Image (cartoon, rainbow, N blue to C red; front, side):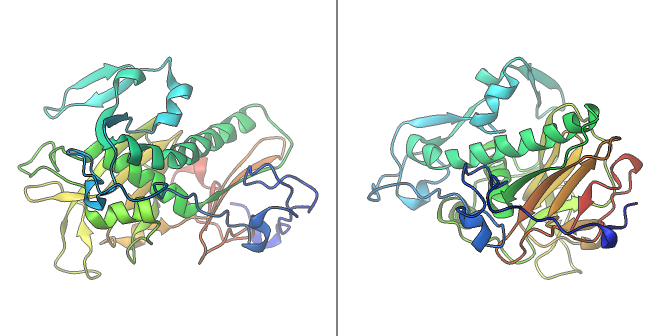
Amino acid sequence: MTDVSTAPVIEFPDDGPCPCASGKTVADCRCKNRRFVPPPVDTTPPGIITGIRVPKCYAQVTSDCRPPLSRDHAIANAIWEDFQRTLITRILSDGSTRCVPPSAAGRKVLCRRHNSALSPHDDVGRRFVRALLYQIQHRSENSPHHTHILFNGFDIERWMLKVLCTMAHGERESRVHASTTWRVPRSWSKVLFEGRPFPRGAGLYTPRVGRGRFDRGIMAAKIVGRQGRSGPSGSFLLDGRDGAKVVGISMCIYGHDFDLHMYPIFEAEKYWYRTRMYRMRSAAGGVSHVHLGWDEAPPSFLGKVAPVDRENVRDDLLQ
């Protein structure tokens, strides 16, 4: 395991490109004055509130819709271009699987106005997926160079929330046990469209034990649970039996596990919360970094190691 206490502090020269991909130099980018936390993307529908509610749009509670319903993909429209030749495998309610092309995998759960407003999240998600894929390429090509890619952690969380809402809205909460049809809570819509903060204890978690999932693409599954009688107030046991409700989403992106929980976690000691650096080292000594930062927790360019209990990724995560 790397001793990060002896590692040099990461510094970005003022005349170099900002790692947030704004296209500006570090000196001219807003990130520098924000402690290298990129400004969050704006997803507020533009113009005057329409006063319209489109049936089946999960954001109709805002009375700011514009018909018609617009097709959205659970892994976000922007990523389609990167997976046009790859079939998507869906797990059906009876446990069987069905493969469909990306062009046919969308769901109509948002009106055109709200779907368009969330398109910046699609761009964030696509860039994040590409950054994690680049790390693998960087290592396989045995690159000697150090690279950095910067994200707003709140944007990553909202992208994952968008994926969850698209995937689960209007579906049974549990595909195995008795459950009701799930609807996106109004408070979650406010996080997506108004930039409201996540509830205390909610957000991005990394399991401390790797789940051994595939590393060739993306897997996403909703997390269901029941409210526990002990533990933090309002926390949920990850339990899919009768009466369970949707509490978050689990994603595996090229071997990295990411869990978004919308309520406090019952066994928080099994996770790292809001990890701020993901790094991968090549045999030639080059390190590719993916940085996440929140306004209250900017990127930790020199953090403590947050090991995942799987030998090949022990040095990839830092808080």
